[in-house]
Image 1 (tube, rainbow, N blue to C red):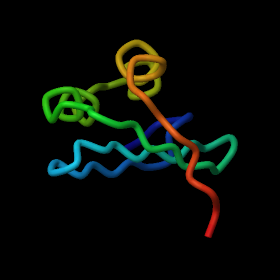
Image 2 (image 1 turned 60 degrees about the vertical axis):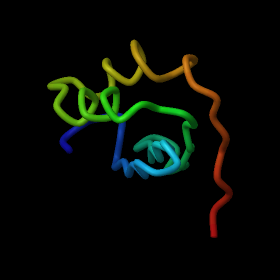
Image 3 (image 1 turned 135 degrees about the vertical axis):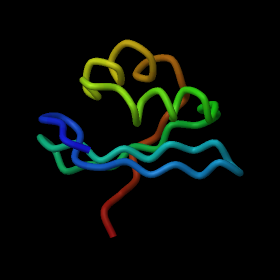
Image 4 (image 1 turned 90 degrees about the vertical axis):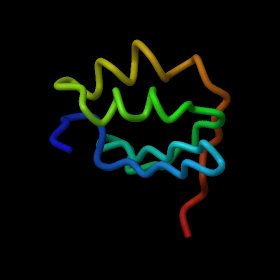
Amino acid sequence: MPSTSIWKSRYDPESEVLSVWFVASGKRYDYESVPAEVYSEFRNAFAKGRFFNDRIRDRFRHRLIPDD
């Protein structure tokens, strides 16, 4: 996933939780109730940061996951 703002992501289809790690902060946020179709579109988006900002950020409940 080449992106200047998103380091990596992981999706759990059973719980519909999308985990996103950000380049600048290194922090991980989990986004809840993300439909599989949205995740698929995110994975296929050319500009993942732009897609994230337009379609995921501020649209799904999220929480910061503390570092281990």
